[in-house]
Length: 394
Ligand SMILES: Cc1cc2nc3c(=O)[nH]c(=O)nc-3n(C[C@H](O)[C@H](O)[C@H](O)COP(=O)(O)OP(=O)(O)OC[C@H]3O[C@@H](n4cnc5c(N)ncnc54)[C@H](O)[C@@H]3O)c2cc1C
Image (cartoon, rainbow, N blue to C red):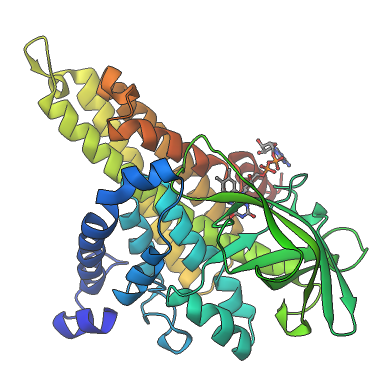
């Protein structure tokens, strides 16, 4: 798809410092796909608590899965901003669940395989994931430890022909049907970061099970599960990267996850803002559109200000990240501000919709619920502030 677009546009033409015409063309392609292949079915998928597996394949067949991965590993050969445009546009599907599941597939569970994986791991896991043939999940959080990754208890013990893993993983997106989990486990009794490693765990191995499918406040079209690993034996070749490096690998992974999350939050906020603007211009009270009331027009102006400020910031940070810069403070600032902004925008939009905003037939109720997760998933607001304060030397 990207090559097709490139043939038709002058790639040098700059629309913004970060986006070229090919990104805007891709935006149109994604938007058309969303309108036809996702949006009409979202209500049904929300009711069912899951969407069809086939969506991953349809996206891949349309050339839309793994936009920013090189072609030799099964991606579409685009730059980092293709992924940002994708995250923003998925924000327009009318729910947060489907974008979250796709984001896990392309920007959370698979980047460590691309970055740290062997040729064989790329062939066996990354390529099928980017073709939509295998579903990926990322397993960091546990029932007793979320923010504090260094304290995870899931334990992998080395045996002659592999590793035996025991433990539980909690709140795992795509967890009920993933084909593999990119999983963090403790590989030594040493406390803290040093004894942690990453594995790729096939979910059809004996001892692997889904203990619970979790019922959530929002993000309902995405399945979330608790996973149990009871003496799951994985071969040596499924250790991802070097033994003992898992904590650093997952900290690297979280940088990309947070930036992707920020872009997704901006995309959904933009969509919510457009819904609120349209409603405000067509809903009458006291003989005039409610957008004529200064309190409402100023609220819309404030919403737009917050969205644009977050977008500019996220693009600037994404640009530096794509060049290989290490930016824990900047990425945390982008994630924190976009996450808070998205739920703030949803809350103001609900207010503009009045009573209708609180009713399920209108899209705002769901988006209000779904945007709440941005402030928790991929690192909570408080953890973002901890990182920022730490980088400030406090
Ligand atoms: C719908 C959903 C999908 C998810 N998907 C995944 C997934 O696919 N894979 C995965 O691994 N995880 C996933 N998660 C887990 C998510 O990343 C964690 O919930 C999150 O990191 C917070 O961890 P916790 O829930 O254990 O909260 P805790 O870490 O127990 O935190 C509880 C509270 O204490 C605060 N707190 C903790 N430490 C500090 C501190 N040092 N300073 C100040 N405040 C602190 C937190 O900010 C929070 O307010 C998902 C969660 C949800 C709800």
